[in-house]
Every structure is written in structure tokens, then in C-alpha cells.
Amino acid sequence: MDSSTTPPIGAITTENAQLDVTLEQLKKLVSPRAFTGETMLLNMGPQHPSTHGVLRLLLELDGETVISCVPDIGFLHTGIEKTHEGKTYLKGVPLTDRTDYLAPMINNLAYCGAIEKLMGIEVPLRAQYIRVILAELTRMNSHLVWLGTHALDIGAMSMFLYCMREREDLLDVFELVSGARMMSSYFRPGGLWRDVPPAFFDLVKKVLDVFPARIIEYERLLKENPLWKERTIGVGVISKADALAFGMSGPSLRGSGVNYDVRKAFPYSSYDHFDFNVPLGSNGDVYDRYRCRLDEFPQSLRIIKQALDRLPEGPVMTDDRKIAPPPKHEIGTSMEALIHHFKLWTEGFSGPNADVYFAVESGKGEYGVYVHGDGGPKPRRLHFRAPSLCNLQALPRMAKGALIADLVGIVGSIDIVLGEVDR
Amino acid sequence: MNWKTTFRKLTRIPLGFYTVLQQTLRKPVTVQYPEQTRPMVPRFRGRHHLKRYDNGLERCIGCALCAAACPADAIYVEAGENTNDARFSPGERYSQTYEINMLRCIFCGYCEDACPTNAIVLEPIEFPTGYSREAMIYTKSMLLESPPINVPATPQVTEPGKFDRSIVPFPPIDQQA
Ligand code: SF4
Ligand code: SF4
Image 1 (tube, rainbow over the protein chains, first blue to last red):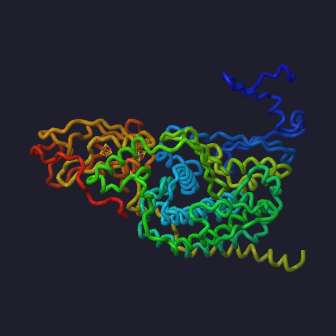
Image 2: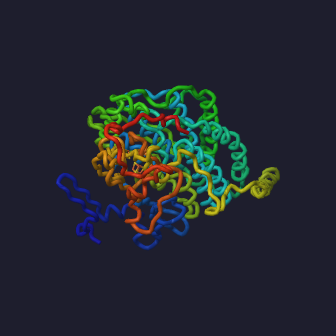
């Protein structure tokens, strides 16, 4: 087709913006050989079980070799960022659970941290420590789901069952503290919803007792398994420079040997009070990314142990009544408490006219929340820096030259959650 | 490849089998739902209930704070006036209409937090299910718990001046399990 007569595809014309995607531009995504029929175009997804959600990959294949791989995202777009613009700062918490639905507490932490930074409030130390314990449990939860599904993709079925079994112990902890297994909404701007119940400590200790033996089991099954190594070593390699250039973060970046962890680089929520190591890989292949995540389990346990031992007493919510709702028993006796209660639950608290960015290390990488406040009780714009999206960008580079059978392993190794990619 | 690495590789597969076979000796973690159910924690955010005081009066005063706090806009409240001859709740007003759209509700528990009288509580029992959209809009009669035994239901006839205040001090909820 002649380029001058090519009609623009999906031309969106508004008064001030024009987005023309021409067929010519789309053609550049695959090699010219695809148009002569030399290579084959193949759709993988959006309903493929190994894409961990609704991800569509457009593959150009030469025999079994992937020539190019074009991710097509947006099938799970739920407009969470836009919805935030209509919600007060307090009401935004349940929405954040639903971005990366495998790590709700870490999302809550990032969001609440951003609001606290915007409002300039200090969170009590006890709340910070409990947040750290729960965030590390969430990281383990996220890694367990990743390990199970990733191993299942490559063919190690029993791993999936074991990981789901252990995850249940972690979900029990979340259920105990927040009343919900996955959509916890337990962290609130200024602290925590309620203090943890006494049974919490026994449950976490049980996790601490049981887990080391379970990690040994996982290692026995996969670490030295020749079949597993055959499928993962040297597959989906990405160099240090490329990984940085694509803006990767988290274990996927550390697998390439870049020592960047938000918990160490920009400590938040008292992470600087705890001793832990950041496991690093060197080759940047699927196996190293797998090692990085598995080595994070013992480190998470280490952090939880330290935080439990040193957990201070005290309140779990800031005493700033302009942000934290008053205790309910005060409402019946104090007029001021009643006014604050009504004002906070209807209008909400007003933030300053300012921009803040607050990042945490989620199981997938740097999960950041950017809030642009306009002086009112709702954000004018709220943006999530979703690690899954940034890591997914590197997939075409990793997949180039790989075998199609290895592609599921590569997609699995970057640990994407489509709810977070599309938001 | 020398014989050492070959041997090492060969031992790994039986080790994996051993690890898997070990699991058969463990107690299963699954339960036979629905015959068996797992216990739910006290904080579990299940179905909503509208509570009453011990004297049978409804706790809900129709302030619609729950509706304002709901992030999913699932609650609809319409208030009515209490009189001494037909009293539903202490204070001036009660909820004439109280509806929760269980299809919209995300069970976040914000309504429970916002309620000044602890009228609405999410309890770890009963899951809302239904075959149609209409059936999933829970009305006040479905949500309101029945009055204690030997206590008259609402509306009650009460003596003037006894229930002037909407909010009676109640024991703290914040320390709840
Ligand atoms: S639980 Fe949450 S979503 Fe459901 S009615 Fe209450 S406030 Fe609304
Ligand atoms: S349930 Fe509570 S918050 Fe809702 S209208 Fe009744 S008293 Fe007000």
C-alpha cells in the first residue's frame, strides 16, 4: 500500500491534541520480512494462561525463534487513577488495593506514605513497625504467587500447590488484622485502621517458624534441578545498561546486578532501623531473577523478626485530629470530636497545593505514587509508577532471539501483574 | 562435564521426588467446603447488619454519614422524623429508607468506621448472594436485626423527653479484637 494513501488508524482529533498512528508506523514494530511471508505473525494472548492475566503479545516467528515481540496492553484498564480524582484522600485507600492485587499492603503503604508526605504528618513508630512487618509479609505473598505460577509455566506443577499452601498462612495474618484476605485497606493516612489483635503475634511467629523449612523445600525442588537450570540459565538475558535504560526495578533489575532497592536507597517507614541484605544476580537471565526473589525470603523473615522483637508500645494512629478520625467513644461526649468525625467522613481533609512523589519497594520493584494536590480534599491528579509496566517494557529486548517455548518463562520471570500494568 | 557434576545432577531428581513424596505424610490443609467451613476472624468484613439498642430502639439515626463515607456509593439513606408516639431511634431522626447495593459494595468497612452510633456493623456471617440485580439491593428490613427477646419492635411509644439525644455514650470499639 502506498504510504501517501494510507489512512491513519485510530486518528483521535481533539481541539488541542492530535494522535495519528499510521499503518506505516505500526509496520515498523515487526521486521520487513513479515510482509513477504518469510516469518510468521502469531498472537499470544490475551487469554493465554501463561501471560498471567490479559496480556496480548504479538510475536514474529522465524521457525521457533522469536524475531520480535510486541506487548499489547490495556485489556484490564480500570481507570483507577482517574477514579482517584473523584475520591477524597481517605477514600482512595481501597482503590490502591486493586492495582497490584497480589501485594495490597505495599500499595496501601505507598499511597498512605504519599498522603502523609503531602500533609506533613509523622506516623507513630509502632505503626511504622507494624507496617514494615505487614509489608514484608506482603512481599513474601507476592513472591510466592510469582514462584508458583512461574514454576507452573515452566512445568514444575507441585511448586504451585506448595506456594499456594504457604500463602494461605500469610493471608490468614492479613485476615486477622484487617478483616479481608486480599483487599485489606488496613493502612490509613496517618497510621493504621486499628491496632493489631493479640493473636497477630502468634500467627506471625508461626510463619517465622514454619517458613525456613519451606524455603529449603523450594530450594531442593528447583535450585539445583538440572531441568529447571536448563530452562532458565542463559534465557532472557538483559544487560545491566539495558535494564537501567528501560527503567526496570526490583528483583528483575537486581538480577542483572544493579544494586538498587528503595528500602536501602531511600528508606521509608523506618526500614533503616533493620539489618538486611539485598540479594543481587549477575547474568540478568531468568535464573538470576529467580534467585534474587528466592533469596529475598530469608531477608524478609529477618526484617520481620527484628521488627517483632523491637516493636514499641504506643498509638498506631497520629493524634492529629485534622487527619485521623477521633476514637469513637469520644463522639458521645465531646462536641469537638463529633465535628471532626463528621467533617472527616464527609468532606475529608484538605491537602496543600503541592506535588509529592513517594516510592516504596514492592515485590515487583519501585512502586511510586505521585500526588498532585490542588488545595482541596481530593487530588487533582494521582499517578502510580507501576513497576510491572516498566519491567514489561524490557520484554521485547529479552525475548529477541529466544525460542517461543522460553517466552513463557521470560514473561513469568519479570513478574507482571496486569492489574498494575493497566491500572 | 566430569563424573562429579554428572553424579550431582543425577541425585537432584530423586531428591525432588523425595521432597514431593514427603508431602503425602502431612496433614492436608484443605477443608471439604461446604460441609466444613473455616472459622472466620472477629474482624472479618462480611455482610452488613443494622444494630439495635437493648431496649429495641434502632441505633441508626439516619445521618447518612455511612453513605457519604462509602467509596463505592453503595448506600442510600432517607431520614424520617421520630415522634414520641412512633419512635424508631433515639433523637430526632431515624432512617426511613436504608438500602445497600451489595453488587456495588466492596466490603471495605468504611461505613462501619463512619457510623457515629455503631449502627452498621460488618459481621463475619452470611454472604450476600442472589440471582438478580434487584435481589442484591438489600433493604432496611433485610439488614435490620430482630429486637432482643421480650422487647417490642420499632416503632415504640415512648415517654416525652427520655430519648432526646441521638448519641448515647457507648463502650469503646477501638480496642475490639
Ligand atoms: S463496606 Fe464499604 S463499599 Fe460496602 S457499603 Fe460499607 S462503605 Fe460502602
Ligand atoms: S448507619 Fe450509622 S452512619 Fe449510616 S445513617 Fe445510620 S447512623 Fe448514620
